[in-house]
Length: 265
Length: 353
Image (cartoon, rainbow over all chains, first blue to last red; front, side, top):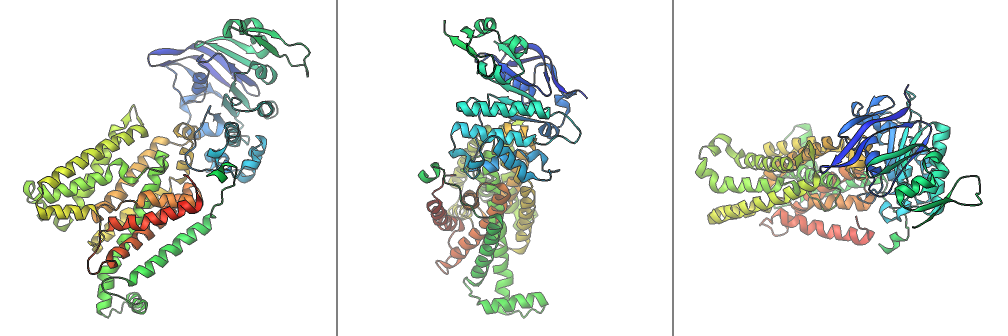
């Protein structure tokens, strides 16, 4: 069984302009891949292609061996969950309602303990205490954690046919406080390591990517400039070139993870 | 609002409590309004009539005749109309993700109104043989067809590249409503005084024309619409997250849109064609249910149908009895009955949906 997302010669246009130049990449199951790049580099576009929200103008994407367009949306929904950058919810749904919506694709063949899955998903992103709160009254970070819990609930259990599950996250940490940024990325990293889930996340924070991701794809102006193991890709040299900012390794590392300090030119 | 901002957990009615309360409310309303009217029927007489109807031993007393031929069809029509309008309103609000949406938004009521007015004013002139062919159904069928045509036009205008944009549908609906309004104005201008009065009366809605044949038609359409509508509850919950997110959860959003439009057009079209325009029910019933029980469409859809039915029954009872022997227009009464009820809930729960 093929256990990867294969991007082959994918290019995207919007309003007659190329927003993603033809690119190929491979995202492996059981690994956490960060997509990085300056604003407008095409990160969300790429994630949109991976999640079948956006049709590429050329090239194709295979998920677990099958072309994305060839699978029914209900099949895809059981296999991969997508966390949006922002999600406006209509009406006064509570956090628990929202997380339970993640189980929508499984309504025809529910798990043994659907309520338990919702509970555990809320615990995983630390929103249990918000379960009865109305989503629209929460802070941005609390909302993001509620949606992450929904996304986790969607692919909570291994699939009966043994297919790899995927988490596609668009800036999951953007609205979170420092502690929750680390907690959330640690959670999805654990999912990748222990459950073999494939994680693809758009991140802005290079240090978070260095600490939690296995692989990285760096985009610049719609072109994939480099991809591979995160420490090989995210070198001070490349960061200086792509982001136009000075970068050097921080002294006195705790826990052995490489971290950078940035200085504007 | 302030209290909730600080994190008060929502207090909501349990699903079973809500549905039981809705059914009890509907039955109570039914019992109260059955007895009231120009010809008063005491609860005892009513029991007798129902007993006779069940045993097939009809006495042909005046009370029996009034109840079986005049009041009962009217009550059934009121329930079917209210349930259909309530359900359609809940579907529209769910699809547009907006609590201000109303079944009239996609043009079905205004289309029906224009067609009805046109039939009254120029129908006899341009198609003199039409009333002969369709008989007493002329107005109903023309209004029904008018509502469906305008809705289809709105839907077609909102479609491009295989997608239906609800924002465009909203704008197209507003445009078509304005156009139908202008057409209605033109018809009023052309109408004789008597026709004008008929148009005006039709626009304000009434259950007065309830005949068993029309009641059966509306009930069947409303029941079908409610059955179809209830299957949309979970997809509409997912659509509350936005169309893109719903699609990622495996919802066929286009299919849901088509269903909502079809169900609304059929239910509201059939109701409006038979009763004229009954405003406010489709807007207010879903609101009230959401205030009581939260936004889950598995409750909002059936709850709105029940509450809509009860509201129309209550409003019609008031319309029949408030200024006896004259009958007030129902459309006026639905607002008189619905608004205080709505405001009471709004104050009580201090919520903003």
